[in-house]
Image (cartoon, rainbow, N blue to C red; front, side, top):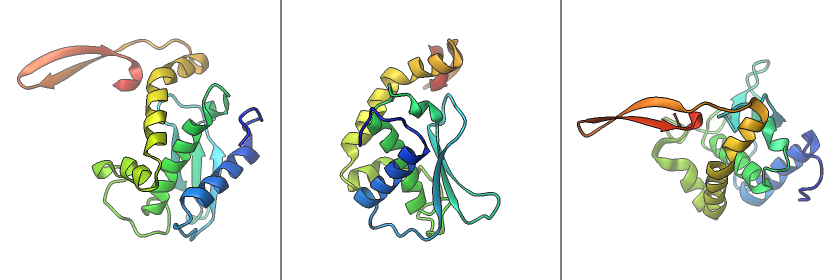
Length: 166
């Protein structure tokens, strides 16, 4: 796909269709699935939910910060693949739920690996770790460090880190 074009609703829909065709051809679309941009968020990259109006349509919502061309396309793809994994595993879809919790046992990374996409997963994680805070600050302003108490093996430490790691 061309990364210089505008990342509008049509681009997002085409990206979902491309991902479904290339990587999730084995997952039957048993209901209507929509994809859309939601509201800007500091921590949430994407989500999947059922439409409140009909309770049957699955809606994948993507952080609109992803419209920024500074975000590589593979980061957006990996987020959609993550949400498609939830769909395939029966979370907010008519498919039978495969486990009790949507992230239990590292199922997301395992699904990426089973589909030959573990490199994309790791690349996305690396990019987010290195660049996400910059983008968040671009859209939300400078972020203050978060202070939290961490207890490990009979010791207590105060850990200072970015707000998004708390």
